[in-house]
Structure formats: C-alpha cells, structure tokens
Image 1 (spheres, one colour):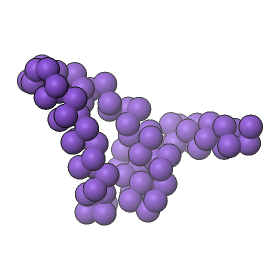
Image 2: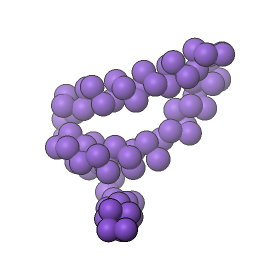
Image 3: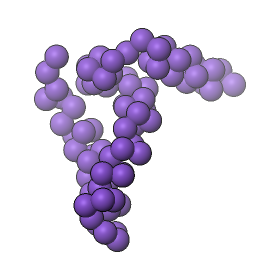
Image 4: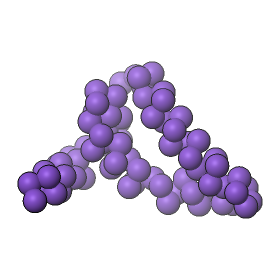
Length: 79
C-alpha cells in the first residue's frame, strides 16, 4: 500500500542521513518517524540497562517511563 511505502521511504531517509540530535529536532517538530527511529536505535539498550539494575515488573514500568518521559519532554530539547 502507499502508506507502507511512505513509511519505508521515511525510514530509509532517516536511517541513512540523520544523527540522533537531528532526529530529536525532527521529533520535536512533529515527525513521528523520527521517534520511531530513536526507539529502534535505543530500545534494546535501554531495556538491557534497566534489566541489569531492576527486577520483575519494575523493569517494564521503568522502560515505559523512559519512553514516556522522552515523549513528554521533547519540547525542551535544545539543538
């Protein structure tokens, strides 16, 4: 479908050309694709970090809080 093609196209552009700082600025301006790319890049690392320091359901709770915090505070990001 066209929607899938557009999503793939944006992912390719973001993957090949954007640094994390640029992704944050793009996400701050409203591009959800930028958040998706940040999540793809860092979700495993964030989860692994939390898994080493927490246990049980605390891991998943903290994991959700990390991403929610990024979303809620994106407007504060400075370039």
